[in-house]
Image (cartoon, rainbow, N blue to C red; front, side):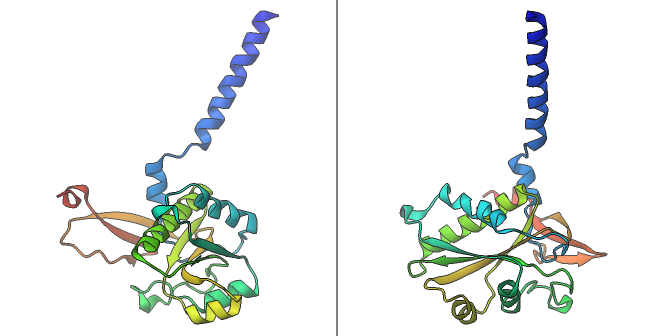
Length: 210
């Protein structure tokens, strides 16, 4: 009886270990997979609870002077999302491609607002928030792009926002093939596309350290 119990416990431990390993994603992997995505799969619908899980990271991350002035408007697929799409710009460095391609437009958004006038500290908070939310989305198997080029007046009026919008995070299931390319400090840092692959140049470590 004792032998059977121990055998069962060992099987449970082994099973739990396999599940834990399967779920674990290293931070380095998340960083590499966390790319700005400008094309999304239409057969995947981002639900409100998914956006809530992404925004929840803001209850745990750093905040300058612990002010926590950021607030979030969640927008899922529908007329509101269509309105946001008409008031944002993507792929500014590749204007000839007119991104996103038709049929790959994002359909869910997180509008990030601030309850206080924008300052350097709030901008730092914004960067921390956007990066943290993007990493969480990546962990969930989703893609994001941080958007600062948008019609602020139209967004405020349409959603009757009482706080100033600072950025918009588009969220969805990525339809893109994105790869990093290591470069030296004197090479171009502009992202580009070749044969359907989106390349993102990143300066190598030796050139970053002074």
